[in-house]
Every structure is written in C-alpha cells, then in structure tokens.
Amino acid sequence: MTSMAGTRCARHVEREAVAMCARCGDFACSACCAPNEAGATYCNECLETTALVTASRGARLLAQIVNSAIFVLLCTPLIFLDELSAEVGLALTTGVGLGFLVLIGVNIYLLATRGQSLGKLAVGIRIVRTDGQPAGLVSLVLMRIFVPQLIQVFCGIFSLIDSLSIFSEDSRCIHDKIAGTIVVNDDLQRARPRAF
Image (tube, rainbow, N blue to C red; front, side, top):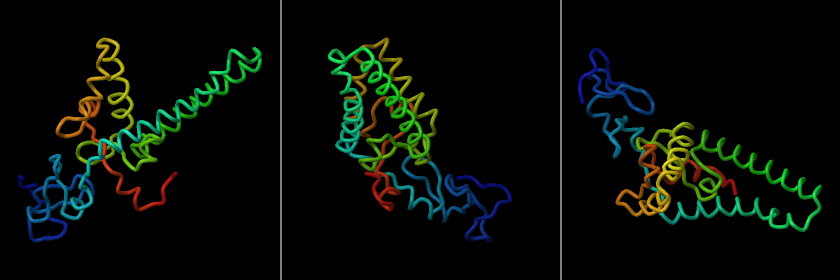
C-alpha cells in the first residue's frame, strides 16, 4: 500500500491514508484497511461485511433445477397443441410466448438489481464480482450467458466442460471466470423474509 499524498485516515486523522475503501469510499491508514481474498482493499468495517462465502455446488444445482422447473412448467401446455383447435392452439402458443417474455424480463430485472435468477433467489445465493461488488447487467447477461452460448456454437461440448468445471478448486465454472464473477451465499437475503 502506498501513501495517498495529503489524504488522512477517516478514523485516525493524525495518520496519512494509504488506501480508499472499495465499498464505502473512506480513506484508511495502514491500521484501518486490508485486502479481501479477491485483492480489493476495504476499511476494516467494510471488510467484515464483504466476507464472501462461496455458494455450495448443491445450492447452485438446486437453483438450476428451480430455473429449469419453471421453464418446463411454462412449456408443458405446448404438449397438448396437436389435440387443440387452431384458434385455441394459437392462443395457447401466444400465452406461452408472453409467459416466456415475462420470465425473461423478471430474470433480467433480478439479475440487474440483485444478481439473482428466480432459482438463485429461491435458494438464497447470488452472483457478484470476485471483489464482492455487484456484477452489473452487462457482465451477467453478456459475459455469463451470451459469450458461453456463442462458444457452444463453435465447440459442441463446451456446456459439458463448463458444467464440470464447477468441480475446480474454487468452484467456479468457466462462465464465472469469463465474467469475473463468483456465486456466493446471499447474507443480505437472510436478514429479510424469504421471497418464496
């Protein structure tokens, strides 16, 4: 850590600051700050609240099962299309299509505001950058979803390799590494009532 010419520690005004907290923005002296496991520097107060607990593989699997179950439930009415009249079939297809748009909209909203899909919300896990900060919509949608799907087009087994990479030492899939994200337990959610 290096001196930040002329700035003073927010808690020890007699000491020169050596860093600015990545969360609250306060200046901190060497006694009042430290890096977290991802290397970002935090004041001691914020450091205590940034301890990232990686979500278990089981929690991530359960969140994916919830997301898939929602998708399957939405698709189930399409099984009966052959046995319905053209008008009813068109109405059913339109309804399912609108349902998909609502599902996509809800998931994009949750990803943008909370770093969660419906499944992750139900399980109590969320996606953050490796420094604990919110990941941001571009990182979540473009880097975690679009780029891996594009790679899948050119490498047919990418999804399998990506899924199996969760067994790496840091429990991060390839799409997590591409986006610079990590899936963690949602400590904030434990403080509020469950959504489901």
